[in-house]
View (cartoon, rainbow, N blue to C red):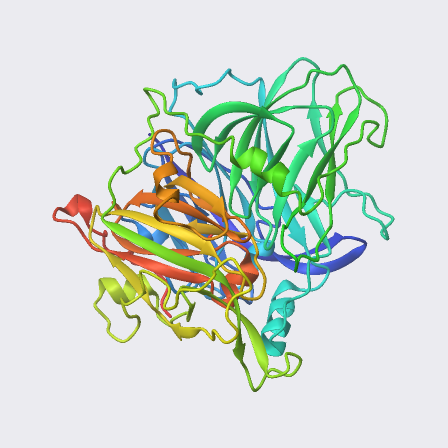
Length: 536
Ligand code: C2O
């Protein structure tokens, strides 16, 4: 195993998209940021040098960070932000992990432009459990606002209303042909006829689950969230912010330009966004400038198209890559995830109210010192460990919801003994309206053992859980007006954030954290913090 050194210069860069320019925060002047390459079990050191007038942290989304929470990155959860002029070295080991993940800023809305792919190759000499591709291509999906994204969210917080939706989606930083702008910033994916490509697809958008499809080509799904799956063929994949999907693409046509489309998936009555990003799959030697073979993206509420993909996902469960789903559960939790409306006398536009979001009716309040520091150094008064194991009221969760369910606020953690097995049923609520929530857990992969529409029923639904070959992920889309059940083993001591990966919902409070106690031995304890850990 190697030690890999990277330098991230966080710098401002004037960037033009949709025929208008703005200054964005980037890594090394690139949007999307650089792809990091490493191999399984490598140690990665990334020196982040903050040269902008903005607090920065970087999160290595999906990296397990075994006992190294100090390198996880969420601001005020595992570290204080890297302030302007400061540096911090993220030091972590990719123990037992290979596949595609992503890195992104984890403070405010900075990840809109500060993100990139993280490619972990198998150990030298270890083949993929699928036919070796001729080449690999990284496809990073994103979202673009013409205005400054921090201004967008700050304005929303002041008014109490929902923030403006983005002006475009992007494929490797480019929106494709967009009406009302004459420039055509189209990303080309170059392929040669007869070859097979591994596409490493990353959704780094802030607020949107996306469909992804390529005209005239089937995709063979082989991996999600850096875990291998049983290969299957499909036309359209769905990918939530924070998720990654590896597919094999056989360039089985002779020539031509094929449309690549990334379009929103939002099966909610409140959905307003409908922008499609386009790129081209370009057979080398083809001269046409515009795609000649087109495809129609799914409707934004095409739940069936999404379900076709999601229900096809199964863990590979081979001898070499077994599925280690916990068969028994020590902590059985039921979490409602959803939106709400709280009073807000100072909110002008919102008629004295504001949109909030909550888990089990608790709107999480960010502390001003990092939770992991408070835990490690025994600093009192920063958090409490009374996060509720179930919602405070029983109601028809997937229905319209009771009239006045104001959320409570607090910095509440749920405490777990080392190595406990945990089941969490995540139930969407319809309090404002049902909506998709891609929920991400830091520090762990989990197994998705069940999923359904309506209200979870412990008596009947649990009987149908898949405990044989469930897919393993770090981010799961809780269906609008439905539920999903996950299981994991709390084998990583520290403080681990769990939140909706739609950034607007995180901002509104759809987040909580688990505190996992140390085990008995040093191999079961949080390692001491590095010397350069930023101070608040
Ligand atoms: Cu990719 Cu806490 O986030």
